[in-house]
Length: 178
Ligand SMILES: CCCCCCCC/C=C\CCCCCCCC(=O)SCCNC(=O)CCNC(=O)[C@H](O)C(C)(C)COP(=O)(O)OP(=O)(O)OC[C@H]1O[C@@H](n2cnc3c(N)ncnc32)[C@H](O)[C@@H]1OP(=O)(O)O
View (cartoon, rainbow, N blue to C red):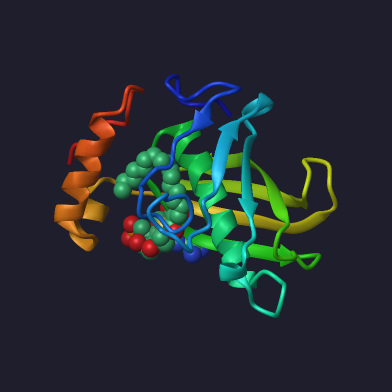
């Protein structure tokens, strides 16, 4: 599968997509603060450090927040490599090992295929290193939408600010005019 011609290449760090995103946003104190970069072979590498704000059992990450990390990592892979707005239709997670507070999940995500509006992607998350033990695997189905999805269902004023902030960025942005 070919990336979009304007997709960021290997070595590119991916900026947070929205400051108030729970997955990647800097303005969400208890958020996941995921950081992502494109690696070789169209693999997107993301890291998520588990803090006390992310617990389920004492000292262990909550499974739903781990799923959130994969939603973000997979969504970012789809959005940045294909440069199409898409939303999560389905997300499946396999929790294979507990993930302790203080550990960093190293997530490697890739595109698996596109069929019409459906985009398939998968990822695995390893503990504390790119070659650490696999703790979580996930598969997602994303569905391409046009920008009216966000203007119809989201907060139009916040979207305007979002769009203006993205326009001000130096890198070439998506064409997200409705
Ligand atoms: C704001 C702009 C963004 C700019 C970004 C800048 C760049 C940064 C890049 C990227 C970072 C992004 C990182 C974000 C990460 C987080 C993402 C999320 O968490 S998204 C929130 C959670 N998801 C929802 O809220 C969806 C809610 N659902 C819906 O709105 C609809 O159900 C929708 C759009 C998914 C589909 O509805 P329909 O009416 O448009 O289309 P139909 O016909 O139902 O589905 C199309 C095809 O998909 C299949 N499909 C849909 N859902 C399915 C499912 N759950 N399982 C299996 N197939 C499904 C259908 O069977 C159909 O397939 P057939 O074309 O007929 O083959």
